[in-house]
Structure formats: structure tokens, C-alpha cells
Amino acid sequence: MTTSGIRYRSIDLMRGYAVAVMVIVHFLENLAGTRDWSPDGFGAPIFVFLTGVSYRLWLQSRERRGVVSTQISQETIRRGLFLMGLGFVFNGLVWLPEDLFTWDVLTFLGAATCLLNVIRVMPVPAVLLTIILAVTLSPLMQRLADYQAYWANGYFETEQTLSELLTGFLVTGYFPIFPWIALPLTGFIVAPVLLQQQFADNRVRLWLHWTAAGLIACVLVSASIRTVWPLSLQWLPEWTMFPASMSYMAGVLGMVMLLLSGLHGWLDGRPAVLIPAGLLRRAERFSRYSLTIYLLHHVVHLWPLWIYGWFSAGDPTIYWGNVFPWWPAFLLAVLFLVCADRLLMLVEKHRVPTAENLMRWLAE
Image 1: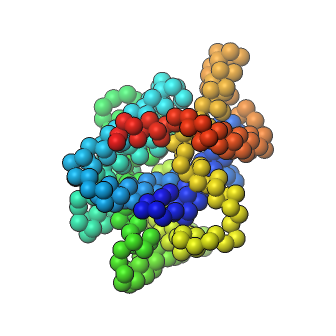
Image 2: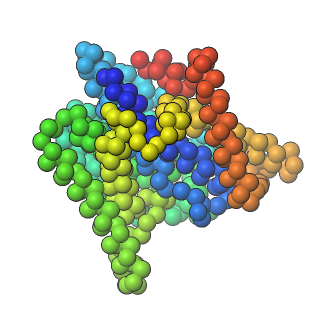
Image 3: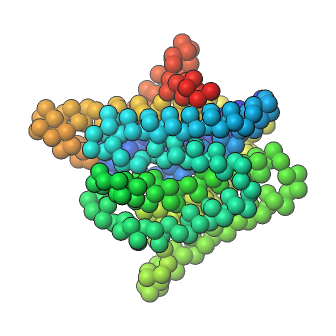
């Protein structure tokens, strides 16, 4: 990712990793029905966190060009609505019509983008308070909404009523506003500090590092106590992504901040060390076309599954999660990543329009 002529290879590497993890996790889950050893739970937080970081960098570039605030708001809202609309189309066409309101990552990113337009004019203490409330209130909201009732079969299901749709959007969906909004908001406010664009006083940056390390330490201590003291199971949160627990959110918030800061100091503005140039080029490519890869990899492995199930058994979902053992699903994921890299090289060479081009054309 670039801004002001600077190559943020740290962001490219993190987003490229998140995209590769996403592909592997989805192939394993949807084709083999397993998450046992996959890197599940680490790709999505990085991707969502970087949404806030990238928005901050984009906002700074627009402000430097003299773009007025009203135009920035219009572009931001158009981008957010595009992502939400694309999310609904994706749910209906790539998954199934009954999954239209599953509140997956695209619909969340669209809503988060619109909220970032509000956050950008708020004072930092107010944003910090919003982040804290989003994380700390979520367990209570999950209990009040009876989260598990929407996940009785291990995946999100909801009735098409206004109240349940709103509950899914806010609390019980795959990526609800609470607590996931904490990640893009954190990325937005910490980007200038961790990327050393502002705050010459390193005390702010050091404070962020200690905060991130403290969050991770609290999670490790909590997990250790839960292991050795059975009574703690009643009051210490466990590490779960669905629902996103306080332990999970604290851990991934600390992880993504330290990861961005460490990679920035290691990679940006200096020759790459220990990381092959070819890997960095592929990470940049996957980062640039992450939305296209997200759409394409679902089509590639889900549509054949639906079609085969429909023609062989009259039920498009009959083979979902049980068509392969884990190792063919993993090999297919790796094959897709290799083919996607070659395909995106041709896209770059011939300037073929992508989902990213369409979003920029509609939003800007």
C-alpha cells in the first residue's frame, strides 16, 4: 500500500497473509468441514484492522490534495454502501438466497466504512471510549440476544424479521458491529502513531506498545488460570471467535498493533531483510486485489459444490463440509492461491477491470 510515495510493505504483507489464510480456512471449512488445525481466527482481525489503517491513510491523502470534508464524506459513504450492497449480492448469488442477511465480512466492512466517516471528526478520547464500550458491552449484549440460539447448528441462522435482522447486524451475525467495530476504529486512531507519521514524542508510541503487550499478557494469564483452576471457567472468558469473546478481542487487538508496528520498523523505508522479493511482490498483489480474491475464491469452490449437490441429490448443500478429507481441500486452496497469483499478473498486465476498480469508479 502506498501513500505520499511511501511503500507500506508492512501493510501489504499483513493483508496478503490475511487473504491467504482466508482462502485456506474457507476451503478447509466448506469442503472438509474442519477448523481443527487451520489458522482460523487470525486472518479476519488483521483484514478488518487494516481497513481502519487504510482509511486513515486514504483520508490523509485526500486532505493533502485539498478535498473538502463534504466530498470526503460523500466518497466514504458511497464506498461503504457499495461494500454493503456487494455483500448482499454476494450472499444471495455465491451462497444461497436464504443466506442474504448472514451479516458476513463484506456487509460489516461496508457499515464500518460508513461509521469511520463519523469517527474521523470525533476527538480521540471519544473514539477510545467507543472502542472500550464495543468490547466490554458485547458479552452482555450476546447474552441478552441469546447468541447461541442463532448458532444452534454451528452456523448463523436467522428468521427474516426486522428484529432478528437488526439483532444479527448488531450482535449475533458472523461479523456484527459489536464487538468487531473495535478493530477498524483502533486501526484508524493508531495508524499515525504506529506508522510514525505524527507524534515525534515516542512516549505515545511506547504507551501503545505497552498497552498492546498488556492486552496479550492478560489473555495469556486468563488462559493459564482457566487451565489450572476449574472454578475460573465461570467468570474468565474463553478464547472464541464465534462469538468474539473479550479474550479474543483483547488478544487480537494487541496482536495486530504489535504486528503492524514491528513490520513497519522492519520493512518500510529500508531494503527488505530476510523476506524474498518475490514474496513481497505477491503480498502486494494479493493486498491490492484482496476484494477480488475474496469474491473469486468463493465462486471457485462453492459453485461447483452447489451444482454437484443439486444434480446428484437435489440438494445443493448436501456435500457442504463433507466432500473431501482435509488434505485435498488444503491442496486445492494452495492451487487456487498459485493460480490466482498468475491470473492477477495478467490482470495487471492487461489492465483488466476488477472489483477494486469498480468501487473506486463509483466512490470517487
